[in-house]
Length: 204
Image (cartoon, rainbow, N blue to C red; front, side, top):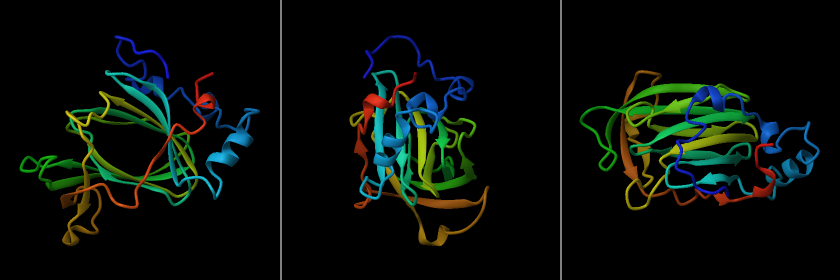
């Protein structure tokens, strides 16, 4: 982990995040370390979902999510946070939502579906803010590596992560449709294994 600094996150501009590739994190076939690393993190024995921390401080965090094919990150929020997400490799389905004025992170309520996308890496960086695309869910069609930048990071005391499910009557509908989201505990089958092969996942 790199030392914390007082400067703003250097990746807080999507144009900078767009310059990073899987090769910068040892996840490209052009890197001599990649075959061993990829075989380990995407093997059948590996967790469905792993996270490797690149940087963490009070101002922002940077990490890589590694999703095996079929893995999902359930619908969740980012309270008062700005997030940059870039699919470095693989194919991923992304759905995101905005709260309507009557709803809130704590009690849920009505939200508008604002994105339904199929992203194939290297894909342009996606941005979400406190009031734009703040809730999202992801599903990996193939093995995926995703760069994730949070500013500020989650905090159990101040910015806890809340999960949601769609009300049964809200299934279906495309971009622009109104759905009802209900807060739920962390899904029992959802687990993230941390700091996998962290020494290899550093920009060159």
